[in-house]
Length: 168
Image (tube, rainbow, N blue to C red; front, side, top):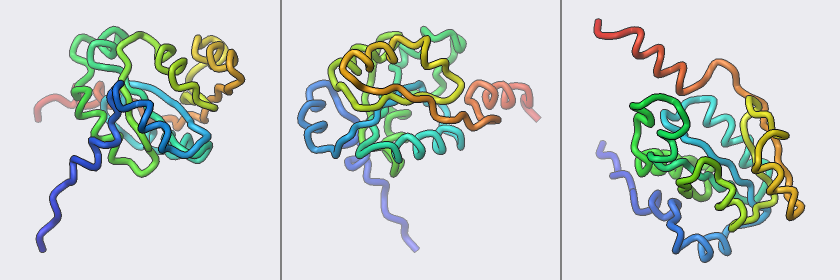
């Protein structure tokens, strides 16, 4: 049995450049739900979180840190393990994700202000009250919400476990 080739054009269509953003957003059902992260090594916690986020609105927009932005988060000099285009393509392949965007700043506030989604979500391990994104969302009547954290799953702990196992 021959398997069909992965249609990267379809997946790349979900990865939006700044130039394509306005036109693509106009075609997406509202309300828009926005989240962000590095999503370096996709795992069960990410997939569960993104599925739950998608259930909250008409479309899920996922902003990912560029490689340079991700390196600035203090996760280690060799992170992210996967390049931004590869991380975007993996996320774009998920049924729950309607669009993938990039941001190069420490927070996605600039992108949030341009898009003005109805809802901003993060995992339950974040203190929403302390995030600048929460204050920004409130400025136009948007809402910020923490989705319950799926414990036992994190890219950092996964990478540590792999490194500790070392060569066999």
